[in-house]
Length: 290
Length: 255
Ligand SMILES: Nc1ncnc2c1ncn2[C@@H]1O[C@H](COP(=O)(O)OP(=O)(O)OP(=O)(O)O)[C@@H](O)[C@H]1O
Ligand SMILES: [Mg+2]
Image (cartoon, rainbow over all chains, first blue to last red; front, side):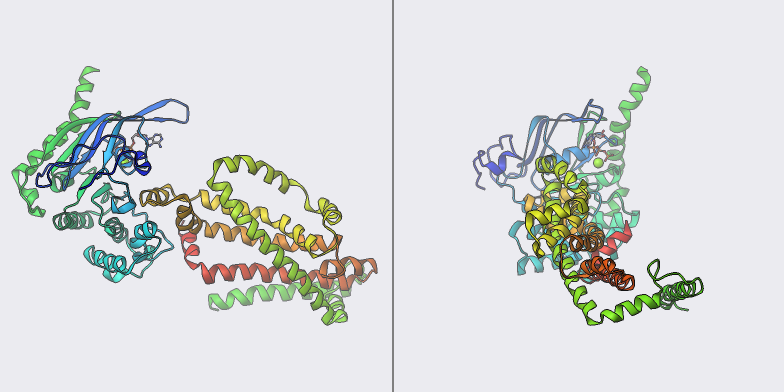
């Protein structure tokens, strides 16, 4: 892997932390995302400062699935937006990808909580959108790949439909297909299954595990569901209430491939309980203090 | 009656009744023609003009359509600029609002002095009258773009230009057409004003010249023609919207 020099102008916007020296690719733990002392402070309309994130440290390794859980408003989305280049840092530093120039969805792709399909384009063109932005037009290979991805998420027949003709779950599948169109190394997902019904949700979780098994992407997943975090992740990062910082980092050692039956394992409940304690514990302590 | 039939039959029935009552009132109360011509008088006035009426109508239509086209060429890009760049917006928006605040009827004679007594001046007047609603609609549409769509474009690596072309403008289409619908009716007014102050042809000219000779039915026939043109153009904008941008109507209804 070659490393682009850091003075690359396209890079300075996004990656200011120094990437670690490349390790032999045989080693499993090769860092690909790094947040160090990351802090974000918003200014509210009244002019007060609102610290959303404070001193967040997190390293994510290649091919890992890491979940980010924590109480609502603790800054999970903010952390994801930093990595996507949508949110500037107030303090600290971060670094994402192989230290190369960012190239749209071919490097880092994002799945938003809502499908965010362009209503004036059909499903296929929506999936192709990142390719169009990157190259100006979609090549034949892009189209073939898009159809393949739609097949993967079970939307092969819907390629020519307009987004409003799809159900919410189908739209979210399409947006997942879109995130994969340029074969990104890193997938950022902000509660991708949050708005879906339980059945579709379970279906898509398993899809994601399958996609990960096949494509070995690095995935950072924000979720509100503790069981989802345990089911999908190699590690779960638990964040504390605002201002958000890392509270606990849990290595989930449940055998793979995982599936619905993994939920029955005693270890699964152990992990779930630990995460729940992490999230709700501090609140109880605060009540005792008061 | 099926809904489609109702949609045609009901308004036509109302219209016919209205005309009939008007005619009846004119005849029974013997309202003088110079006060209020009866429908039959107006029809007669139009017939008296014959093909000349259509000749003038074409002239006016030409001015409206060209002026409206210029207003689109000015208004849409200006709306884009104003909505995308904050500095440009802060610099020019007040100035544009000020220009729009000037009553066009008041400056039309001045424009004639400045630009002369030809078609150019009329086009300028029409453009000035109707570019504002088009510009404002474009700008509001661009700024209405959901932030998640903009986030998507940014993460996908879109430049400002690509973002405008692939996300903001398509989203703004239904807004732009609202602006165009207003703009096209205002353009009719602009064209008439332009012909009032400066023309030797066109329906506006015909209205002033025939009124000067107390040929009220002739003038009223021209007014009816103008109304028809206005309705026709409004519908034409609708047809273009439905024909080429049907998807934007769908999202409109969904919101
Ligand atoms: N643009 C903004 N301006 C001001 N405050 C913001 C902005 N975006 C987020 N915040 C604040 O920052 C904090 C963290 O927001 P964030 O969206 O990251 O939370 P979250 O962990 O994703 O919450 P949830 O689980 O509910 O989605 C919140 O208190 C929120 O009010
Ligand atoms: Mg969030």
